[in-house]
Amino acid sequence: MQLQPSCFTSFTQAIDAYALPQRFTFPFYYEPHPLCVLAANELQHHLETQHDWQHNFGLTGELTGAIGKMFGVLLVQNPQGEVGYLSAFSGKLAEQNHWPRFVPPVFDMLAKDNFFHAENLQINQINEQLFAVENHPDIPRLSTELETEQAQAQAELDAHRQVMIDSRQSRKAQRNQLAAQLAANPTDETLRENAITEAKLSQESISEKNQLRDIKRYWDERIHTISQALSQLTDERDALRQQRKRLSAALQQKLFEQYRFLNVKGTEKSLNGIFNGTVELTPPAGSGECAAPKLLHYAFKHDLKPLAIAEFWWGAPPKSEIRQHKQFYPACLRKCQPILGHMLEGLVVDENPLLTNPAEGKTLAILYQDDAMAIVNKPAEFLSVPGKEIEDSVYSRMRQTFPHTTGPLIVHRLDMSTSGLMVIALTKEAHKQLQKQFIQRTVTKRYVALLAGMPAVMANKQATGHISLPLRGDLDDRPRQLVCHEFGKAAETHWELSQLDEMARTARVYLYPKTGRTHQLRVHCAHSEGLNTPIVGDDLYGTRANRLHLHADLLMLQHPVTRERMRFQVDPDF
Image (cartoon, rainbow, N blue to C red; front, side):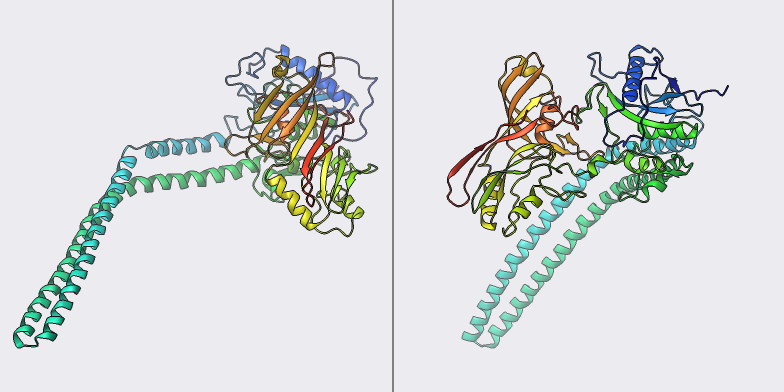
């Protein structure tokens, strides 16, 4: 009997009633297959009951040092036709790469016998040297002395130059006076006195120039002495920095070459080879350490047929990101998309749903129209403007409906998944006037959202509140947004409780955005520093449903021509 690969896990219950997937999961947007859900449940039970290792996931209330983690399960079939699954964690777990049940890394950086430790030790030694040099007490002392000396030198030189200017003006006045005296009394005696005075004035000028030279020479020598002493330290620092940079780059390239990924065809590619064909060229840090590449590589290496994949978050969320405990998530785009693009070659994979037009068959209702503007009710899953792959949008529909309009039409946007009111400018002048209102924030916008839970602040009878969390794009996983207090753009939302449904454990709220950042309302609802409760149906920050339950229900603005204050309202379909 052929031995199973050590990481192959059989299900603990019969799975005969489950149909196997016909295509492999499209890993960047998916509903987990029921067998993947079952495998994830078994893995989660293992995480709750195992005693092989300890890791602070932040689930016991101890958040200091807590690190949540992404786990993955890969449904596989062995050559004997038996179906089981593989398990993986992203990065390392409890400071180790190898634990029972889990697939190993594609390349083990923690192994004691590989090049990484020796070369990384050399870099660490340089770091220690660099730390000592960078923190040498003479650097700040000499830097301060140099600044002081330079300032004093400049001040003394400026003062002497001013003396020279004043003296030059005085000598000019004396020469003018002498010339006048000579013109009035052109005698030999006057000529002789003028010559003596002129020689004296010339000598004064020469003396002042020599003094300026001496002052400059004096300070140059002092500054040069300090600069030399400082340069000895800073040159050593800069040389160490360059050496570290060179060694780090070489180690990184060598490391990337060790990460070699198989696909079903048996073709192997390194990280360098994979990312050479991308815009970035250099793999981002941590590439190849995610669960999905580890799972697929192990499967191909051990002749296991991949059937479906799912990844879930376990533990407390990172401070900036939105991650729900036990929630399934797609593979990240920046690191995993190029790698999985290679690894999935030769597999029959589900279609990318993001390439399917979500607006097909949907009607864009016009609620109001005159010569200057129109108000439309955008359905959920309907683009405001054309995307990279899909043209159908509010813009394209309006361009077809109003072919003779001037100007850009679109004044503001709604997220594709958000439904509700949008104003359309039908003339260039109307667009300019309406856009000015949005810029000056004189437009009133209200959204209604159904939250997938009862936020603690609302359960405690708080009826209104304000959220201020700066946002930026997640560079590793667009279009997701992050809360980032360092580099994020200001984002503010006022909220009001509309209704609590204690039976359904949901809350209906009104949201008033003061700014218009991407996914602002979704992140402010879902983030732990916001309402800590995602919107129902939020496939990015919560759990997918039939739709995102977020609707722009109220819009108040000034008519671009008549200047009349107008109010539009349309109820959501949830």
